[in-house]
Length: 278
Image (cartoon, rainbow, N blue to C red; front, side, top):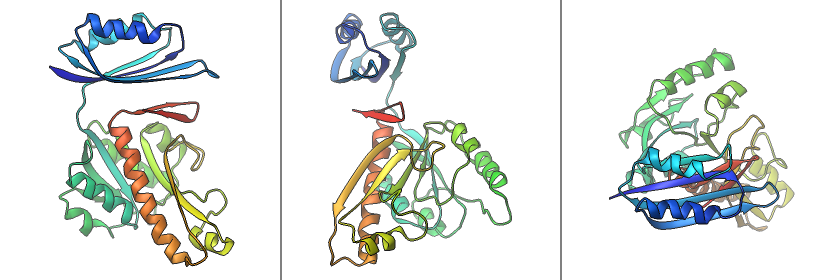
């Protein structure tokens, strides 16, 4: 007996849940869990099912597609660890949290490498027996540096996701398009109010009462890609800007790891610059 995740993205129509469930039944599959959602404004139907049984995944996918509206997307996934590459610069909190969770077996992932434009984090990463690749940007223009990063990433087989663990360089449209819907980023939730250098100091000066973090897929609009996970915490007048920064880093690392876990478990549907998450 094998377990499979079945993901369906289709135009909505009457009876889809019944028809899909009937296919599971007639193929001798047991439904372990099932979630569905209909976006009425866009007439979109989303469904994630976990089933088990002895099946031909190609045959199952074809059978489901035959009863769905045209242009539907069906994925039948045999759960296994996905391959990820982490990109970082100098900050270690988000990277360190992922490494620890990976070491503890909390993530369904193989970390192929950590890629950075500095060597500052190499000693940390080596402690987890993960390859570390430094690709310095010094003396290179952005396209040339990115070309070297892309060459490095493509040297690994079957990269499922690229995780930006506080990677502090703006990505070009070429890079984003090369790994469309595969790049997960984390940023503080002050944007666009406080941008540029030291947003926590700017927020402190304005007397903010909440701070937080947003994890999202990267697109060509800076920090405006489909949101995967968010979290906020309350602060007050007693917080210095450094207190805010420390608390903000705690939120950032938790939200990034949460978003990565959702991606690794095939719980995210992306459409219309938004996400549906089961």
